[in-house]
Length: 157
Image (cartoon, rainbow, N blue to C red; front, side, top):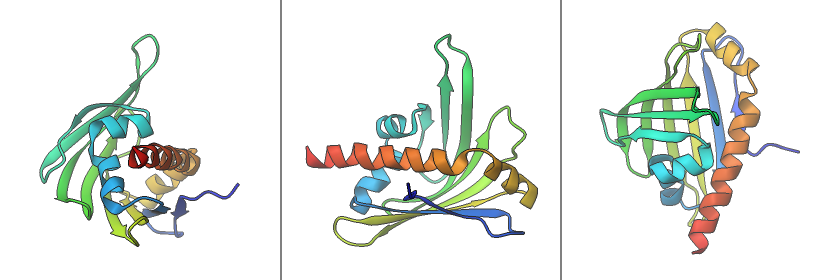
């Protein structure tokens, strides 16, 4: 099955570019990335903090049924332009991956469609390549599929 979320990683570069066209207006797509209750539903992580503003920060985590932390990520939001863009850092705690820089651009294509472009910049090509060894592409595609389904249901209400 073809994945709707496209991952581009050019040889020798320290970046990954992720693109996805959603059947959603840009304001709803942006809300899916910035409202904690929505982020939790499509990402599958608990939102511990999400201050969507310049110089704000965020922290997400996932725990197992015994309360053990399986995943925790955090970062600082450097730039925040509603319905247009977010620039942030992203750090997965307790992993060998260094902090990365992410540029999220939200573009209105029509009244009912919008495009997300994420540029992720890594400290080194090796760090970027190690990220690509994980089931990263499948995971983000599945998460974006959940986002599309969730927000489409909200749109109909």
